Amino acid sequence: MSRTRVGIINVTGYAGVELARLLHQHPEVELASVTGRSAAGQELMQVFPHLSNLGLTIEAKLGKVDLVFSAMPHKDSAQEVIPLVEAGLKVVDISADFRLKDAEEYPRWYGFAHPAPQLLSQAVYGLPELHRAQLASAQLVANPGCYPTGAILALAPAVKAAIIAPEIIVDSKSGVSGAGRSLSLQTHFSEVNEDVSAYALGGHRHLPEIAQELKLLGAKSPSITFVPHLIPMTRGILTTAYAPLLPGKLASGKKGEEELRQLYLDFYQDEPFVRVTEAPPHTKHTWGNNMCLVYPTIDQRTERLVVISCIDNLVKGAAGQAIQNMNLMLGLAETTGLETLAVYP
Ligand SMILES: NC(=O)c1ccc[n+]([C@@H]2O[C@H](COP(=O)([O-])OP(=O)(O)OC[C@H]3O[C@@H](n4cnc5c(N)ncnc54)[C@H](OP(=O)(O)O)[C@@H]3O)[C@@H](O)[C@H]2O)c1
Image (tube, rainbow, N blue to C red; front, side, top):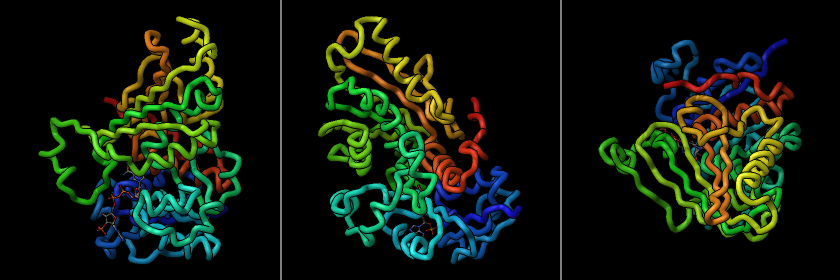
């Protein structure tokens, strides 16, 4: 049987090129076409020597494929995706353009009026751990943001079990590849090396996405403070989420910690890409693979939930999760092509 032909729009960004690397080891699909603006006409391996086994030319326009990944910047991605969806293709959009259900959030957070609000209800938010059943029949999947992936997976079991008050703090540290491949002063080596800084304190674009999904899990009017930080590493996001525990929901002391751990183990028991760890995880434990590692505990002195999560922003936070979604859309085993272990050290 012939393999499903897939394409990548904007292979020249970090998310796009990571998709090419991961799709190369996928046994059930063929990477048939890749596009890129500035590199159109060049061999993929010329532009990215680490992809030397992929004999593809970067095209200006997508060739004939059955499923498309868009790895374009937001706003421009919607312009590419809308005609493809209208033409009946399956699409996984890695940008933010179809993640928010309320079209009015787009001018506020992204600075543009959504060009196809009717597609927002059709798009399925591509976090398989929460929306697996809908993903199987989805034509358009909105791949989650990198920060929201780590934050939502850290909080989902606690929110679903209604053991926390909705005053939530999400503190995240990201490697610099999260800012993309385009050159900017903020991501210049001499600016980020030996430096750590917080940014977007007035409200980061990923905040409405985190709130949207926590509300669907049962959080009533969540009040979320989300502070992202840029740290001098290439890949990875470490998130620490905090929220007050509601009185009487868990036993006191060590027993409460065991109950909390069991609640997380139960919630994620069948998940191939989320593991509840026995010690606080490191970003290095997910380097290059599709895992999200989650460590829940209790600050006994303040009776606060503390959850740490780690992902690779380019894999579970982007390209790997997009392939996980593709597998579900195509009726393949969810883990196909994604079994790679993390790189260490
Ligand atoms: N980086 C991450 O960790 C991450 C995680 C999750 C989601 N995402 C999302 O994935 C998408 C891509 O992000 P990225 O980090 O991979 O971006 P990136 O590395 O910054 O890629 C941007 C590239 O896109 C090209 N580009 C920009 N505007 C374009 C346009 N109008 N038409 C065609 N090409 C254009 C530019 O390439 P040329 O100038 O060379 O043509 C630029 O190098 C974004 O929507 C982002 O939000 C990224």
